[in-house]
Image (tube, rainbow, N blue to C red; front, top):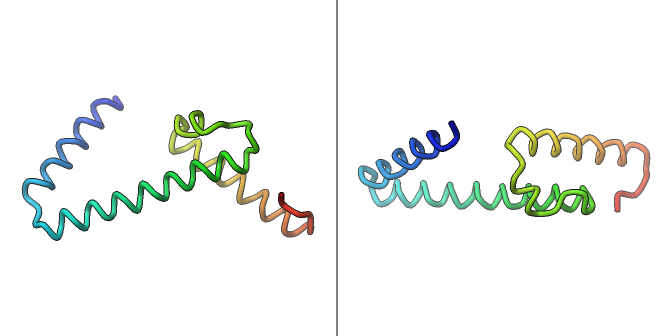
Length: 89
């Protein structure tokens, strides 16, 4: 199913390149760059907060749902740490 979604996504991307104006294409590529940077940051944050229990290769293989749940846990732990006054290393 995932390969079918990739093919559809690829067709959609090609179509946008073919029919879009130069400005629309540039905006779309800039949006993709921002999304890519945010994803890289999230993966690196997971690795850092997990203190080596998940390496970067494993973090890249996480599903969107898994990354989201891990980030929620990290945020909850940060809040608990702030409330308790314990230093977050």
